[in-house]
Structures are given as C-alpha cells and as structure tokens.
Length: 277
Ligand code: LER
Ligand code: MN
Image (cartoon, rainbow, N blue to C red; front, top):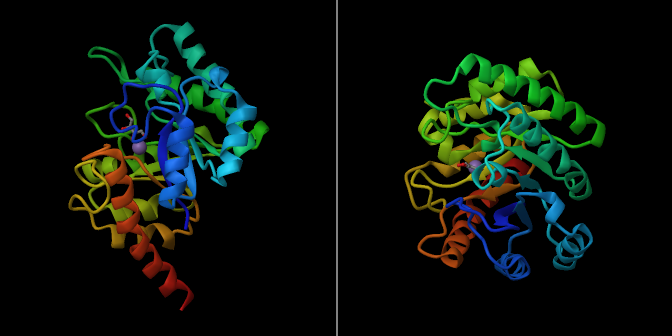
C-alpha cells in the first residue's frame, strides 16, 4: 500500500512538517511503523548529500514519491512572485536545482508556497503573470529532466495565489506542459472546495500527488472529512501514486503516524478489494 508521510530533511518553521529532526531516525521509525514511502521536504538540495541520502533510503526500502520545496519560502523568502526580480530568479533556480534529486528518486517536485504570498497593495494580475512565466520556465526544465511538477492549491489564509482546483486547472492550461499538474491536499480542499469529490474529478489525471490531513489538520480520522468517499473518488480518477500524510504532529508524532495508518489501511483495503472483486 502506497502510504507515505512528510519528513523534513532540514530544520524548518513549518508547523505541519510532521516529522522533523534526525533524518536517519525518522526514516527508520517510518519504516518500522509500516509506511512504504517518505515525502522529503528539502529547503536547499545543495546542502543534501545525495549518495548518502540515496543509500539510506534504499537500505530502508522506502520510496520517495515527492519532494517538498516550501521551506525555501518559509525560511528564506524565495518566491516566484516577489517584486524583486533577483528573488524571483533565485526561486526559479532553486526549483530547477531540485530536478536531479527528483529524477534520481522518481519523485514529483512540489510547488507550494514558493509561488509566493501577495502583500496588501500588490497586483494580483502582475503576480499571476510572473507565476505563469516561472512555471513555464520550470516545466520546460522539468520536461528535459523527465520530472513532474505539482502545484498545490493552498487555502486563502496562507496565500491568495491559486486556492482552488479550478484555478489550478486554468494555470495548467496556461502553462501548457504535460509535466505540470497538481498536488491536492484534503486540508486545503476542505476549506476551498464546495464538494471535494467533484474537484477530484475535475482534476482527474492531473492529480500528480496527494496530501491527507483531516479538517482540523490532525491525522485522518480526527476530524469530519469523509475519507472513504474522498479516497474512493481519488482512486476512481486512476490515481495510483502515494497518499502522503501531512498533518500536525499531535498529540505527538508517533501517535499521529500510527493513527493515520490504522485509520487509512482498512479504508484502502476495502476500496481496492471492491475494485478487484
Ligand atoms: C504544504 O504541502 C502545505 O500544505 C501548505 O500548508 C504549506 O504552507
Ligand atoms: Mn500540503
């Protein structure tokens, strides 16, 4: 079963970076729990020793389905839509610098908050133009590297740039690359999408990656989201990638990770059992 969790490879201020701290320890714990993948949040690939990371991941037999890049915004302020062109360019170069790592692991590269956050008075139209241009540039490089990019619609309290799946689909049309799709996150969808299942169907084969958290951003099963229905719809779209846990480490990281697995496994077994039966 393709279940993963977000693990941060470098220290960050992001609250829902579920596992942070010693990477070797965290990946081992994840494996022991029964996860088969680790989504790695990496602020700067330059500071990652690929041979040792690769050896660690293969020793544990874990897949790396996705690489999160949002820490470059959170911790360094890099953004595709900053008014300073040198910051925009640095953000583009940072995303491109993830491509060799992503190609190595066959992971998608996540475009989260590196798209930027508008300040009061900034022009939304101008920001969207910079965003489209950055994404075209990065998608071309991603195509050349054989890597897929997944932009995550993020709720309105974190950014005003691409909150919904429909806005994400418009961006996909504008960017015009087969290698550019979306990462959908049930926490954000619960805030922004009128009917989560309809939005999953709208995105369909452009769902490149999937984050799960419940309505309160605790692990699935802790809030009011209808995961049996959401996951059935997701799998009906043909999605065969990882279902990646990105939730608050509450009441503690271990309990949250165990609860996620214990809650999702029977739901997925039921869905897959019905598909094959
Ligand atoms: C990252 O995947 C995410 O969901 C955002 O909330 C980051 O700010
Ligand atoms: Mn997310």
